[in-house]
Length: 158
Length: 158
Picture 1 (cartoon, rainbow over the protein chains, first blue to last red):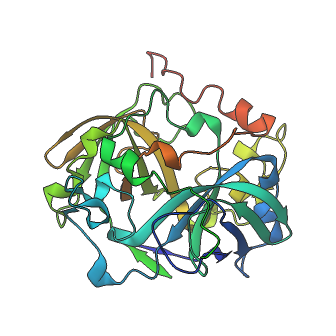
Picture 2: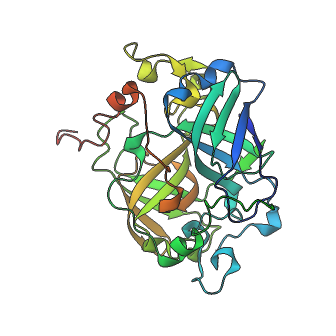
């Protein structure tokens, strides 16, 4: 068992965890009070950041430890929780990559980060090209279908 | 504060956390006893997996909360711990992408995963193309220099 401290909290334009339309999301990560400003120094030399956070609004009863249809959609195969990136998972950890807009003192401004307002952050890492997948990335058809509208810009009536 | 459970443990060819030469690493992730086999079902439909783990050999005294020279190398600028991916960080979380070799019952076989033998795993996620960085990835010169020999195949005398 490992205990995690919160290193930052996300202020985001998105309040509820709907599935799609994350394309226009803007967020600010506020560094936790116990960490010095310099923890973020130099991050603005990178274009992208990887944020590790906790899906803290998921209740213990919602956590899936076996398999399920992604998004509950029976048109897609039933696959293990570790073959999906959904939020109802053991340890409720999310890992997302956003575009760095800027670092201002204790604030990290990020675009296209798919996490809702108030989300607790447990780590922040720069995206380094050599750590991205080596070789061609292949994925099942259901995964491509699921992602179809994920980065769409939200319609104006939302 | 959040408490993490171990979902798998890594058996790896690499025993010590040296900086470079991870190119020939092969690993097996053994699913934790409390999880059903089906938690891994369907993962073999993907080419790559993202593994979230704990650098559990790092002691509390080694954790950096401010800034330092990456790898202690003064030729590189002093940058914040969140502008680096080194192991001596708050919460000691590592996130690495490996190539999926196969799923065999409760075992996930992975190539090129940069984690040492015995490392506790806290999440496993498939790599989905649409979650990789959107737009060009830029990084400082020091980061490219640091990664130069990272994926080199270890010399035969090691």
